[in-house]
Amino acid sequence: MFLKRNKNFIVLFYSVILILSSETLLLRLSPNLFPILCSIPLIFAGQIVSSKKFFSSIIITNIIFFFFYINDFYFFNLKFSLRFFLNYFTTSTLVFFLFRLLDSYKKNIISSEKVIIFFNFFVLSLLLIFNFFYYYQIDHQELRNFISQFFSNIIRNSNLQENIISEEGIDFLIKIIPSLNSFVLMTFLIINFFLTNIILKKINFTINYSIEFRKFFLSPKIFLIFNILILLSILLTNELKFYFFSTVIVLSFLIFYQGLIYSYKFLNSLNINTLLKILIIFLLFIFLGYVLFLIIFLSGYYLSLKRIITKVSE
Image 1 (cartoon, rainbow, N blue to C red):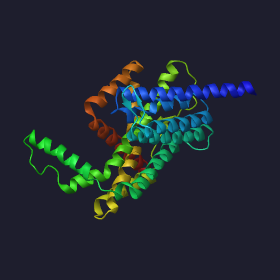
Image 2: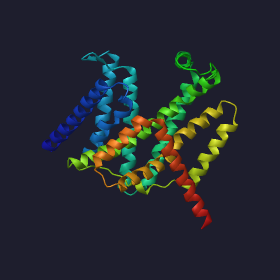
Image 3: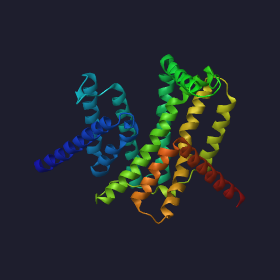
Image 4: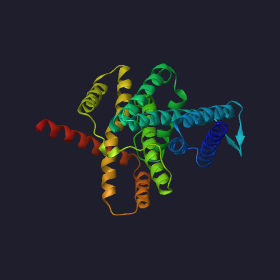
């Protein structure tokens, strides 16, 4: 019994150290990229330790990072700010919830499709609560000034007209920033999950969870609801339209995910090395950026629409 407890403590200790050191290193290397990369150490730990130890690791690391923040702790001139802690807390919460869904999938309680759908709904619920109780209740004058200054600099450095964006346009952009961040966070969390799995398999680690994401098909009901929400977000003129727009942006991840599967199948059909495929994906994101996101989304929308039309015509 003592040896078992001692072993469990050692595994937990190394799991905490792995997460703490990796997250600190990522923050040190690139504070700007930290929000989209910080899920990697968490996924790595969650795949090689038990769910109980993983949950304990998340609790402990959050407490330690919060302690660093409130005490203005510095590590080689690196400050653990509130922004860092909130990024880590949010990501660790989402990763843990995803792993709970994967555990249910592993036990055949839910399907692989519902893992992604329930995860998306969970993020949407958190977003709407955040917007209603906090984000939409505060003044964003500092952010508004920053965006206005940003577009003013663009105007000064180009031949664009001064009315490139109106005050209403700036307000609209501010309102949907949390939903855009949620979309990006979900996207990179899922991408990081599959990349981490590839790396773990290459170094002969036994992983706790995997998911057959190629079997994902968006249900006609969700696709119909998505399109109704688009229509409502366009037609509404009151404050409710921002909630609908935010919902549409987060739900569009499911369409995007459908397109991502198609892109993966296409890359998989190419007879090239796996690492080269990863390099191609990375370079595409670097050079195309949001254009690539739009292309993948449109391909997902087309595939979902085509599948529904085919079912109706049968």
